[in-house]
Image (cartoon, rainbow, N blue to C red; front, side, top):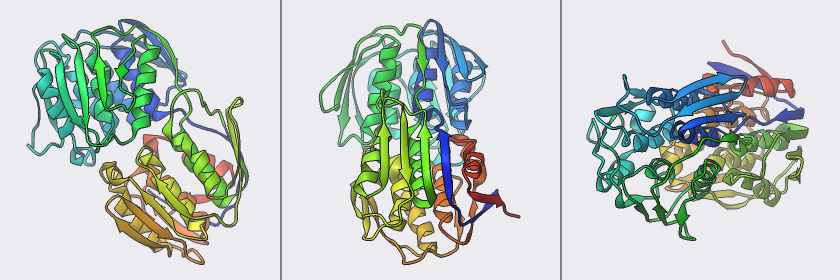
Amino acid sequence: MKIQVRRSKIGGTVRCPSSKSYTHRALAISSLAPGQSTVTNALLARDTLATLACCRALGAEVTEKSGAVKVQGRNSFGPPENVLNCENSGTTIRIMTAISGLAKTGHVVLTGDDSLRRRPMQPILDALGPLGVQAVSTKGNGTPPLIVKGGGIRGGTTEIDGSISSQFISGLLIAGIYADSEITLKIKGELVSKPYVSATIATMEQFGVKIDHDADMLQYRIARTEYRGAKFDVPSDFSTAALILAAGVLAGEKLQVKGLNFGLPQGDSNIVEIMKQMGCAIKTDKAKGEVTVQGTERLEGGDFDLADTPDLLPVVSILALKAKSPVKITGVAHARVKETDRVANIAHELGKLGAKVDEFHDGLNITAPKKLKNANLQAYNDHRLFMAFTIASMMTERSVVDGAESVDVSYPAFVQDMKRLGAKLAPHE
């Protein structure tokens, strides 16, 4: 589905959607917590609904009512009646692969859409082996479909590569507390997206479980214990807020994002500091949970290491289109194995707008053009790229962006919210 975007000036107030990351974690953990849990302000979008469906398939009773999800969890279950379809969600398949090892008997098969079936899963398959869980890729190349043999997680010591995705570690932490004995989990190499592991640990704590780890978060001791039912209020999503704030800076007059929560760890809240460094007019009221930005004519360039916050890659890339000097983004090699190769795709599409983009293994160097060109942009069915390219197109006279259907992954109301704020968006025949 293509949309036509004309030069726009936006302004007003928008309430940020709930966090996709925290919704995944709260649903998965509550499904393993005996008794009832309530997840309020849950984001019910395509990715998180995939997690919810997998929780149901593994025996949790789940009911949804006006944004609140009630979960009757269980920590003992048999094999599901059908395969677990994780749709487009890497978080879902990586957490559910670890949880599948807890099935008492039989096998669990996990798969997803075309994009997900190309994404790397070998690190979690390799890490489950020493813990007594047989798990394989049906294609033998480390990508889904995956088959996990039930029988429980034995426990012991295992290693995992931390350079591809922190989601593998989150899965092992969430499921590992039900192993037969304590697990020592060691991280090989660097740990990317570290704030997402902090988010997992923070969510586990709300359900009564503490994880012991080293200060550098490269070794974890997962004791045998049990979750308890809890009420978990999902915070707003700074990954999405970052895109809305970028829209305010690039095509806005005055734009306020409300409903933010600075209390739980979210790495992407770092967008506030990045925007300040780039010279954006931005004000933060943490007590009220509000951030206000003003449209800014020219921004400052600079170097930005996004190893911990790869979802900010599309945001900083479009901010670079107004920078007076080059913007260098590093540390995002793992963004090549997200929904799409975001590094290559951003480089290609921003080039259509007239930017000079140098692509290297773990990042981009972006030099803004004097004037943006009109373009036909392709989002590669990637929700974050569609939102970023739509915002960038608001600075052109008339551009077309393909891939509007992808936003139901994380922000189903994106187009409606942007139009309400004044964006000139229309379906393109």
